[in-house]
Amino acid sequence: MMLYESFAQATALGDLHTCLMMDMKACQEDDVRLLCYLTPSIYSEFPDETLRSGELLNMIVAVIDSTQLQELMCHVMMGTLVMFRKDSVLNILIQSLDWETFEQYSTWQLFLAHSIPLETIIPILQHLKYKEHPEALSCLLLQLRREKPSDELVKMVLSRPCHSEDQFTTSLLRTWASKQDDSLGEHIKNQLIKNNNQPRKRQSLRSSSSKLAQLTLEQILEHMDNLRLSLSNSKNNFFSQTPILQALQHVQASCDESHKMRFSDLFSLAEEYEDSQSKPPKSRRKAPASSPRSRKGAAPPCNPEEESASSSASEEEDSKPKAPKRKRKGSSAVGSDSD
Image (cartoon, rainbow, N blue to C red):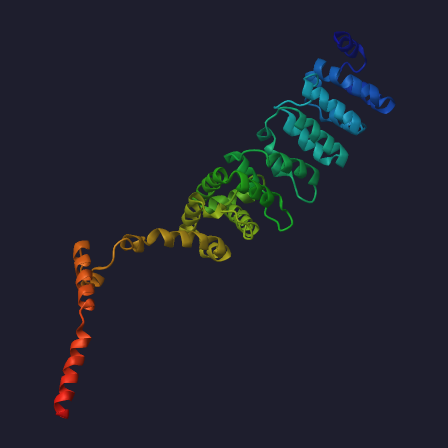
């Protein structure tokens, strides 16, 4: 490859990158199989010219078929091909948002074949619109559902604008709530308290000056309310967690009346939690023993010996022949009258 670099510098162009792109373009137009065959070598020998180039990647994914895509993915997983680097992968994925559908899907498949942490490219969520970028959103959704939620992931997911037709955030939060409910609850609590402590005017200025990743308290409450509606017919106990209820209680105490009215159903969960915490369980303390008033009217308990003695005495009294004595008195009285 040093020979090729010397050749490129000796040409009229005198630029390695330009010559490389021209030759790969010729392979794309004349022989796609040759293009795929040269791809591992080109990326390994000229990393500075290829790993930052969205142009070269687009040349490849624009002409390959599904079989060739699978072959390239195998090269990546075996370590013979590296097409992305941490410091440049985000920019390349952002460039791919304007490509054709199959080109985008191929790009995401090649990216996922690498062992690059998903948090490296999660800021791309700021650029994705649900009507314009369904390919990238679909690939991200399938990958994020396997990830464990972190502060940065939850912040980026909640930073998406809330639209009735965009179910990305709600579906992902619901999946995390069913599998990682404790972890998700703590991270949402952190975001609620952090954004609630920020001045409202400062938040509004930030959101108006930049539309990217400016998470506001209203956004969090909107997504939380959508999640509450999504879980209303399920047996999920996400909104019964103490961290979530404490965070809602904290927000309710300081938010304005318009937010209290708008998210009244959501804040009602915090009110129920507050009522349960303010009332002590009095019934539990008196349940084991009876009241003193009931003891006054009740007779004191007897010993077993006294009970047995009284029962034997009652049996003896019952066995005495009292009835015949009454009959004798009656018969003697009748006899004296007859005389």
